[in-house]
Length: 150
Image 1 (tube, rainbow, N blue to C red):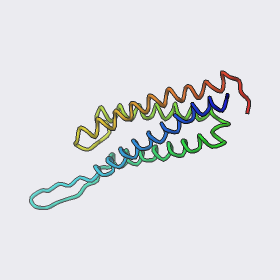
Image 2 (cartoon, rainbow, N blue to C red):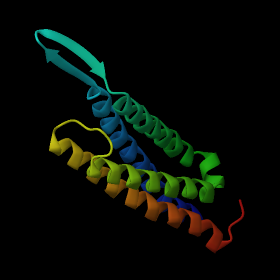
Image 3 (cartoon, one colour):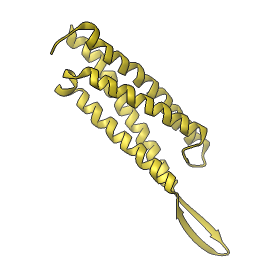
Image 4 (tube, one colour):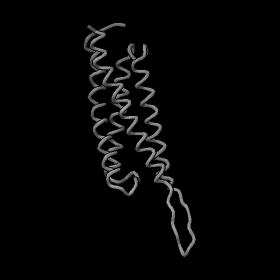
């Protein structure tokens, strides 16, 4: 019974981790591609790089890598033995994704000029972050409430 309970909890955690990583890679790619700005003054074209866009792009991409590593480790033997720890990580990642979604939507994070990109990326961050919070809190409570020793 416990294995079935764990598989119902771990499968959404893996799916949310991979989905969150895809959204992070999508956002990181467009942040990094938007970091290059060209200006033309009196026939001279100059290329500038936005340091803040590069920093946000690298941060979001690293978050995506961490989500993939955590999702893979979650279904391994280590993740099964330490479900509450991975639940806390899911809650933490969920909070970070909610914060990133709010920053993207408000315009603090420099995005491309297209409004569709900002809307899709920030809404994706909101949805996946909220689902990570819920799933992480369930993962944290499941082991402690059932008193299961592994």
